[in-house]
Amino acid sequence: MTAAARISTAPLMVPSPFPTALNGGELAVCTTALTKYYGWHPALKNVGLQVPVGSVYLLVGPNGAGKSTTIKILLDMVRPSGGAAHVFDMNSQRHAAVVRANVGYVPEQLNWGYGWMKVGRLLEHHSRYFPNWDDSYAKHLADAFELRLDRKLKTLSKGQGRRVHLAMALAHRPPLLVLDEPTDGLDPVMRDDTMRVLIDHLAETPTTVLLSTHHVSEVETLADHIGVIRNGELCAQMPIERLRRGLLRYRADVPDGWQGASLFGDAVLRRNTTRNEIEWTVWGEEAQIAGELAMSGATVRDATPISLHDATLALLTPKRAVR
Amino acid sequence: MTSVSLHASPRWPTVMVEQMCSVGLLLREGAAMLLTAFGAMSAIGIYAARDARAFNIVHPAQTINVNLAFHPGMSIVVAVIGALLPFLVWQDEDPSRRLYHWAMPISRRSHSLSKVVAGWAWMMVVTLLFVLTIGAVSTIIERSSGLAQRHEAGFAPWEWAVPFGCATITYLLASAFAVGVRRPVIWLGSIAAGYGFLHFALAALDMRNALRQARSLVFGAYGLFSAISGRIYAVDMETLVIGPDVLTWLGGFALWTGVGAVLLVAALARHVEPS
Image (cartoon, rainbow over all chains, first blue to last red; front, side, top):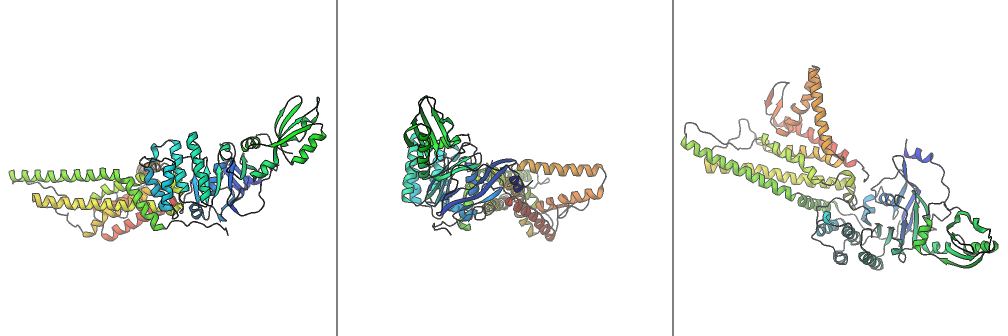
């Protein structure tokens, strides 16, 4: 059976209650109905990723949700079963080489081969493939990441290997950085240093970043867009500012015997209810929610934005959030 | 069209030069071992010739000769090296673990081809060294020991090309498997075992015509062994004869190089997803 046939027999998906498309603007990455099957297992289902030019786009999701598969499709390492991916308006499969020339990629898995090569020689080797390689910047990055150029790649720890890949990804100053768990395996100090290098890089070089990480709090100040992928589906995609406006924590006093527990249904992503107080994380328009709470007899004390980390946790709750 | 200023892909000659350098670097330990082996064999040959000379002086009636003049059958050495080299070139990089190689900004097919070509170029260097070593050793023996170093009867100058041709054939065939499949040794072993079984079955069933066809694939005038050795082929089931002429050898070389090239193109076109 072909992939197309498999897709047509798949059950209809319930539309996400969250925004899944951005409004206008030039896109660095755009995927359309991207679908990928591994055997019979659907790894991606109609994913429509939209990464605006110049943005820092945070792609989050649990392990195995399809983040790395999406990224590999962008670089033509994995071929989609359906749909298409475009990077800077170029089809990622038809123009794979040019796409890769414009991407600095840090992979999640570091088992890449070339383990016999010394780090210094690997950087030199890499530089030959990227005409825009900046030698002095590469030296600066090697210092910043404390790379040991005389060591063979296969002798490096996970964190050291990650830093080598970060240096290779940044040193040719690509228009698009695709970072798949870039701080995984790094100790806290090096993680902090890495984020600082990345911030400096973005300040100096106009770059779009597609970043997949589990350490959301690290990129709280950096990211301006978010995409949430779960079970191969893109269930939310929006500017972070829109997330902060739409996903609020409401604290309210409620009278004894309050009957509003079922309000908003699954739009309540987090519930913390005591006898006379509720603390709910709810997606929706603030005025409307506050109004409905008031009508139910609750007295809203405050509605506060939550951290990106908490918002991500709320969005990744396995429970389907349908309003 | 995007408003972003895009970077260009590297030029193919730049990639080719870099692949020559990196493959050379990768092979340097193996090359050092090989040079040592060539040196040791040369020393043994020269020492044996000196011994033979001393023997001949003492026993003039029973002269022995050490003849290391080039013979196309010696090509079997470079044939073996050619068959092993692709596995060194692609070590730790089976098709599902070739991520770094594939993440480079050049088409996957061209990139893999550049690495194969780089390996082939080094193979030719090794072959040249091999031929030069043989030439040098036989010259040293002739000058230092006075033992005549003569090519065998019927030797023609074109036979100097046989080592280069045979190394190309085995390198191409082995490269196709190293590039295209995850377990090339199992594939090659299975093909050899399958051929052996076919041969055995046809002989057991007394299907002489089919057996002759099967044998000619390897031992015929245009067979693999003839193309590799440049010397020996079978005219029928029982008789091995010496020496295809230059046109026959060129035909066999073209045939097996073509087979290798077709397999390589198929291997290069294969898309394997990372594991």
